[in-house]
Image (tube, rainbow, N blue to C red):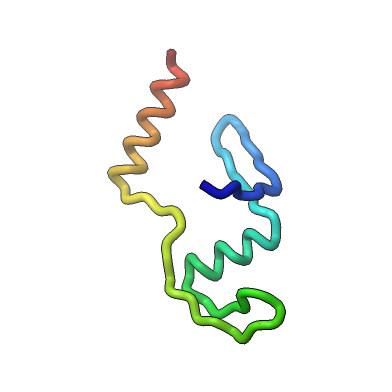
Length: 74
């Protein structure tokens, strides 16, 4: 599995976030929303298919929340 470059992460008692470095962030946005971009400087624009990179349905979000809270309770 390829490594992902992460620019920064932040956390508080109530929330956490991860920010990607600019180049990776742009690439993720292009693939997530199905935008046009150049694969490299010398190529023509390519229309990418939209591919959700990360998403959860409500049931999954509830399960993750429960597991995290349980972890910190013990």
